[in-house]
Amino acid sequence: MGSDQTSTRDSTEEKKSFSAKVKQELKEWGATLSVFIPLFLLFSGLVYEQRVIPSESMVPNLRVGDRVAVAKFAYGYNRHSVPFGMGKWLPLGDGTLFQRTPERGDVVVFEHPHFGRVMIKRVIGLPGDIVEMRGEQLFLNGEPVSTVFEGRLTYLPHGQRQSITARVYTETMDEKSWVTHQWDQGSRGDSTPVFEVPAGHVLFMGDNRDNSKDGRDLTGHCPARNGVVRDAGCSLPPGMAASDASIGFVPLDHLIGRAETVIFSTYRCRKQAGTDCLDGRIWKGL
Image (cartoon, one colour):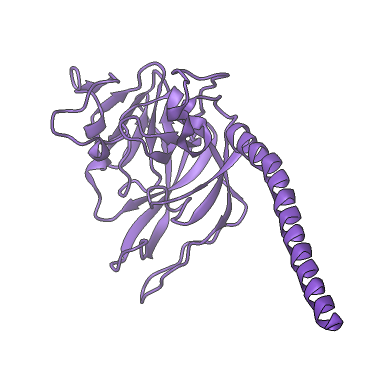
């Protein structure tokens, strides 16, 4: 009888001991998270954050599944640069604190002016610049941008079964160089009207020139005046959904940060006969 009572008491004490350990562990985790989460939010809001590439508009330099480090301090801070899109719920006004203008050739993360979607493209035109595409050749302020043909590449785009062949070019602007693709079948963006970038805005393009809905697409722009697209801030035409509009000219206070490095990638090449694989990237600068 005494042995049974002792066994029951030991079992009860073990349960209490286990319960106390769980409570203590949860308490320690709570204390750790109460410090870590604010530090993480502060770091990702002010210093660097990670973004995942969702589309092929920046191929070959960025591919679907790439994890990119974005410098939040590069162009200053605004309501769009608050982590997790929380800026739209906070009492923050327009404008940017410590605002800096990007450089031509920067790869920038920003918020779509017409639709609350985060985008990533390359800066081509700065305020006051005149930009035009003529037969696949990019012109800046009336002069052709240095473009060197590097060869052809046939590959299978993400999520597609049909391969495409792209002409590969090295484009250089302001002593910065990057690689672009032009598909053999071309697109409407190969020739455009003249764009005159208004004050406080930039013009973006994707490196995958025939698979990027960017600043060349007129759906997000104000109507042209005398053949030149130069205004910003117009309402979309009646019946057009915001999600169908292009980015148009992007205000500087919509910039989130500069994409600097591909940290790692989940991109996997799907090969078929006659196709190539794009190079992998780990800790590769942009």
